[in-house]
Every structure is written in structure tokens, then in C-alpha cells.
Amino acid sequence: MSRATRRLPRTLHPIAWWIWAIGLAVIASRTTNPLLLGLVLVVAGVVVAARRTEAPWARAFKLYLLLGIVVIAFRVGFRVLLGGDVGAGEHVLFTMPRIPLPGFMAGVQLGGAVSADSVVSAAYDGLRLATLLCCIGAANTLANPKRALRVLPAALYELGVTITVAITVAPQLVESVQRVRRARKLRGDTARGRRAVRGIAMPVIHDALDRSFQLAAAMDSRGYGRSGAVPTRVRRVTAVLLLAGLVGLCLGTYGLLDTTTPRVLGVPTLAFGIALAAAGIVLGGRRVRRTRYRPDPWARPEWCTALSGIAAAVATIAAGAHNASALNPSTFPLAWPTLPLLPTVAILCALLPAVITPPPPLPTPSPTRPAPPPAAREPVAAHA
Picture 1 (cartoon, rainbow, N blue to C red):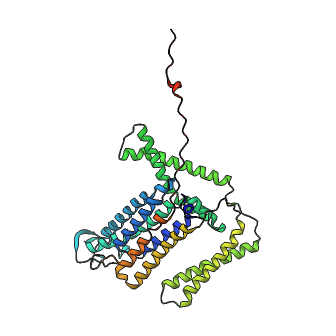
Picture 2 (picture 1 turned 180 degrees about the vertical axis):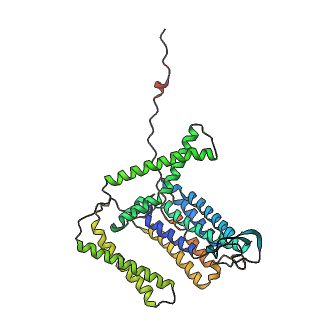
Picture 3 (picture 1 turned 120 degrees about the vertical axis):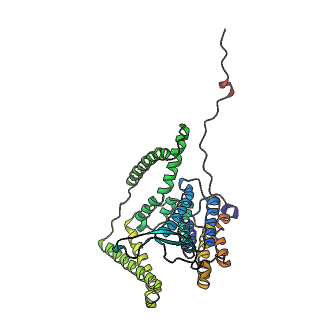
């Protein structure tokens, strides 16, 4: 395949976008540094702006940004309301009146002294959660959920359908709101505030119900939920493998998180659980019959996109193991965050998909009716 062919407009493999976004989410989960979190948001926003399509789900990134702002506001608000005197630092901003609570709510207090240290700490935590949401929103914006469903293992097909329907709710609601607002403007309705919300809410809810009925009818007509003939022995072995794999995953994860447990309970148990779960998924896929038309290619752009997210996450984890204070700046006492070099370069490497991936295909213009010939538009002269 030539270089010019690889640069032709096409949509990237959805799994590559999800791996890239999960790498950014891992970075966000490992740090509370607002400079690094802001850099992650900038990288995700630039890649989304450069490689998003014109599909309905590709317009939901703004919604995730707004949701992140709401998360930060709620986190800070709860810290101010419930975190008075808890870890109060030297810089007290104001003092709220303390409200007495019943005895069964011991350990919870309302009001008290609110310091800048606690507010900044809550803002850091809220920004981290908001960045995680935006990373998932970037994957949901860039990856086609229907194409992602096709690459799942056959045993996870029904679960994948459920997840796909769940993550497409927000983009569909955004599309419905935009369509209703456009229709209201065409009708000359310029109401704002509560009147506009009431006028938009009911059509949006009605549209959501119509979509759900159409989705249910489409799934039923395509034979969703049917299963092939599998012997009882294979079903029992599949169930045992999946349960044993789940137990191994739980024990292995616990062994990795708790340093006091034996080493055998960590990585070996986790690897054994993954192997059992994979075997169960392979056996369970025999009862699901699927056909695949025109599979998605996995070429050099997909490898570069996935590796950029993985490399950024690995470099950030390594930097945190070497200098944890740079990724988690102090808030008690309050200190100005610094911008470490290695995590910054690693996050900037995640910008590569905006350049090395092929551009998304342009939407196909709708056919227009040809204009009538000039003679047909001239008025006919009246006969004397």
C-alpha cells in the first residue's frame, strides 16, 4: 500500500481511538497537577477537533466539557458544605455557621471554617474526575460505536450492544435538542429561560421514546438475542471458566493493590484469571452466530494512535514512580504546582493522531434538484 493510499480519507479503527483515550485517562487518574490535567484536556480537544466526523455522536464533546465543569463545581461545593474544619489549612477564607447533626451521623459536620487549602484540594480532585470524563467523551466522539460493536468477541456481543446503546444516549439527546431548537427558530419562537426549557423538554422526551421503539424493532427484526445449539457440557465448562476467571481477576487485583499480601496473590493470580476468562469467552462465543461484512482495517495509523496513548501513560507512570510530588502537588500546605518535563513530553506525544492519522471522510452531499431551463422561467406573453 502506497503512502498516498494510506492518507486517503477514512475512519480510524474504533479500538485504536479507545486505546488512545484510555491512555489519556490513565494519565489523568495518576495526577492531580492542574497543569498536566489541563494539558490532557487540550490534547484531547485538539485531536477531537482535527479528526471528528459529522456523525451525531461526534458533536457531544462540548457536552462532556460542560459536565466536567459541573463536576468541579459540585466537588468544591460539597467540600465547602461538608468539609469545614476538616484539614483546614493556614489560609482560612470564611467560616460558615455550624449546624448540629443527630448522634447517628457522627463524623459528619455541616459548616465550619473553610480554608483555601481545602478548596484547592477539592478543585484538584474535581478537575481530575472531569478530565477522566472528557477522555471517555473524546473516545465516544471519535470512535463509531456501531463499528466498535462489530469487533467485540461473540460472547460479549449482547453486553456490547447494551454499552453501545448507553454511550449513544448523550449524543442522541444533543442531536434532538439541536433539532428542536432549530425547528423553534424556524417557527419564530424566541422564548428563553424556563419557557424555552419546557418547550424543548417534551419534544426531546418524545423523540427519545420514538428512538427506543425503533431500536427495539430493529433489534428484534435482526434476530438479536438468538443463540446457537451448544451442548450442556460446553455451557457448564464456560460458566466455570468465567467464574474462576472473575475470582482470579479480583484476587489478583487485590494482591497488586495490597502490598502486605504474598506475591503469588498478585501478578500470577491476575494472569491466571485473565487466561481463564479469555478461555471462557472463546467457548461462550460458540453459541452466538454472527456475520461480518467488510471488516475494519488495522494499519499503521491505528498502531501509531494506540501506541501514542500507551507510551504517554507508561511514561507518566514511570515519572510518578520517580517523583510523585511533581504529579501530585501539595495542598496542605498550599504550594504552586510545577510542570514536570517527562510527563509533559509524554502527553504532547498523544497529539500525534491529529497529524499521522488519515482525515475523516467528508459527508456525502444530498442530491439537489436541477434548476429549470431559462425558457421555462420566462413569462408567456399574452395573445392579443
